[in-house]
Image (cartoon, rainbow, N blue to C red; front, side, top):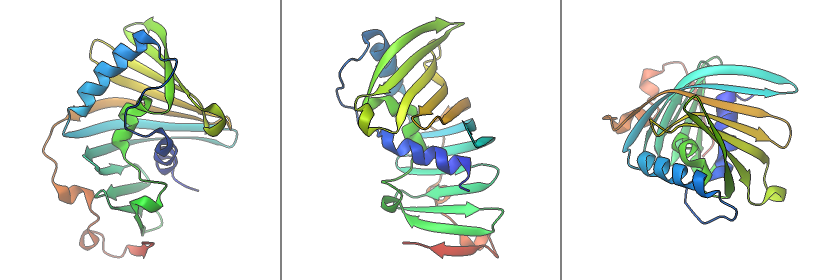
Length: 212
């Protein structure tokens, strides 16, 4: 079975990153999201502590992890695997299997980048403000082309005072719920490019499976 971290980031591929106009955008929600998007796009790097859970009729799992992004480069680690990308290749180290799978990023449905999670509303969604409680604003996203989308609803929990995302919940058409909670985000720290590349010398005994 895929790790839930791989499943989550693979599902997010359909969201995209480039902004475009969509119909039926709630004006109040738009102001909040544009302010948040501007802030996040100003970061040269991000370090994100997260908790990820996925529930469905036959799955109920959760993991904690940490993700690092720098432009199109990313690295994230969870209990069962580490995933590296320099923007062109992706190295997936399955710790329990003692294997590392190497793929061209374009072969993984167009690429996986955790930074895209943070601005998923910017393409192919309409959105609506659902009120504020205890300082946390709820905004719901709906696909602009629901017949062509695998997603039913995306729920954003936003701390307006801090202009930050607290939680993202994704509900799919096949009754799966994916929840991504952000416990900490640190921006604009110095991250070496070597952090985003698999180093075989540091992992003796790990079998490499190159699919490129």
